[in-house]
Image 1 (spheres, rainbow, N blue to C red):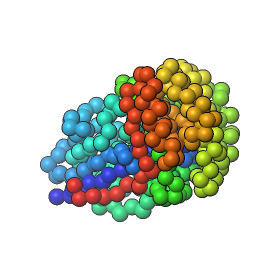
Image 2: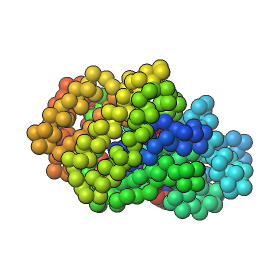
Image 3: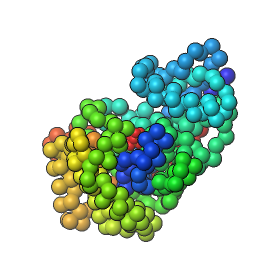
Length: 324
Ligand code: DP6
């Protein structure tokens, strides 16, 4: 029996991916930079069974059909065609964090699936090839293949649009304190959102300035310069949300509490606490902070009325195979 299990972590983007130049291939309109979240993981087992007549997906204990299964099956088609083996797969995937936590699980999901499924189909891919493959399932999954701090190069074609590590996990012990503001699934998912990015008149300005922000962010990470990192990640998050708010139809992911937390974080930083905010396509606020600031950040977040929970994570590793 061909059974393979892989574990991957989600990641939080410091410089965001928002908009594709090719939606089908998930070729992004700009490069992005992220940090792996070691405390959270997706564990996925892929088994090829000759008696199956279609792919099967069991996610957090419940059997999937419809859109979720179709997305996975379409992804497996890429692997089937690359391997020349036209077998169906039974996939079991578990997240260590609740789906309801509103933390994007598609990055860790497709990173773990890319490794487990490619091994099940006897493909021995390099890290770069795995990142390219994972990208086809979910763009941000490209960045959950390497360890630590990763940069996804927009590339000139599918073959050079991949993520690689810019610094290992132990380079800089940063933490992500995630303030859970809502536990409802988002109304407009990222895949749909990417397709609206181009309808905002602000997207072209955002893209034009992307190289500058990528350079600032990469440099801040390499030099461990928190003040510079804080400025660029907050600017980049605000620019992405400005595009979301001005697309047609407009996407408003922030809740009043998200805004309150952002305001608090800037006040805390002005008072000397090394913390900065960033938000993905949802209302939960990720507060990136130094190891010294972590306890204080999570204590202060817990005291804000309406914050449902605070999940904390250090910098994590890359995707890996495991024996169950
Ligand atoms: C706001 O990778 O979830 O989190 O490729 O359609 O799966 P798909 O989109 P996805 O988009 C992530 C958007 C973001 C920013 C980021 O992670 O860079």
